[in-house]
Image 1 (cartoon, one colour):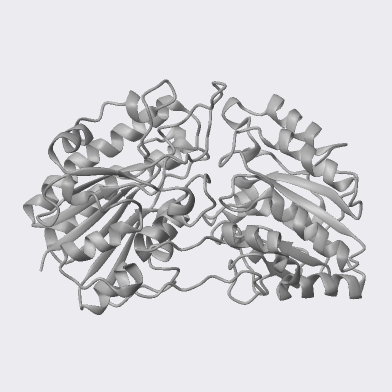
Image 2 (tube, rainbow, N blue to C red; image 1 turned 180 degrees about the vertical axis):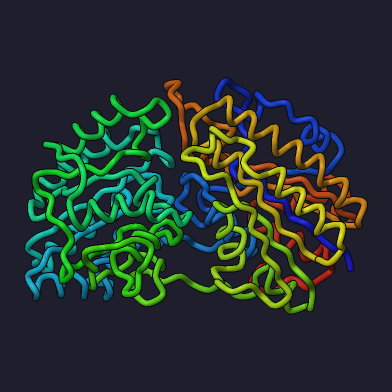
Length: 501
């Protein structure tokens, strides 16, 4: 039975050449060779093709979920937006009950999450809907703890977006902006509790942060005084307003983010009973999550386990599977690719390669790609695995650093590593698919010429070397990310489940 490898170049889309296209500015001899010698196709990786609202930029979470599921899985952003429009959101039992508890007890309701239209971790509109819900349920005091983005939207977008919130609050005065901190601190997922998460915790529970008259003024002051590479919402140090009130043990906290992977640390710090990462003066006992970033707390929009995805089908056939990725793409290659399943499938091995511990990957654009390839080659040569799934993180994570020169190094690093691993795959009888989960590095300038650190809505390029797909014509049925699992199963001569058809 043929074996297959899927290599995902994270954040590597397709766009016309230009000064903001780090891909077109890079020297990529191996990818150029693939374009000339291997059947390839341009496929959709954003909007509805990734289970997102049409026109919405792609992202690693829906990208990997779609590839692994082999079908469109509608994302929480689309679901929540639809329920706000239909009115169903205002009847969500978890959210309604949380607001009623705040009202009945006469305690403060704290809303905490990313304030951004990026739609990757949360969305501005969800804040407005939550405030309206709480107001209808007679909550008397709402404090807003905003997290700056600067990554999935332009670097200094907060100042512009905040005006919309201020205008909204003129008619909803029970809600008052209380704090602002960058996602670098409040949304860390690299277990840097003491260095990052603690700053957000100390802000929320003790008010440790600079006091400002207005959050926009505080953000602008940060842009002026911050080191050059940190003049962005992403790195804003803790700020509090005159309306700041700390989170108290009996208060109610709602995490506004719907995405799972960047809220669990701050939620653990606030609520987990046996938390030991740093000393904390208080524990907030009543925390509610918009998305499933806790195993034991109420979740307004629980995740759906996807059955009969690619890895499950391969596992059920008694085959061996390998996943290998760097730290920041670990959850995508394992949890999301596996249909939101936390445990590996039988026969699945997962190898984590540590990423460099740096504030911004633009300062280390090679990341750990070389080390990842060293280990990958060793595993390919063992001929132990029937399916291998690899993620090269450079183009996405360095692209977020908003440094085009560094992004060029990232692209060339991935290209060089492809040149190392593909001959080994060929030598050991693997057929393979090289693709991407979404765009980023190919669109690093906005129309006005300013730098963009965010993902794009561009399509991605997919290369296939397989006897089952010998020509460009044979790839015409591959339209989007969801079609890659079917392609892989056909390469491996395994039955495609009805859910993918």
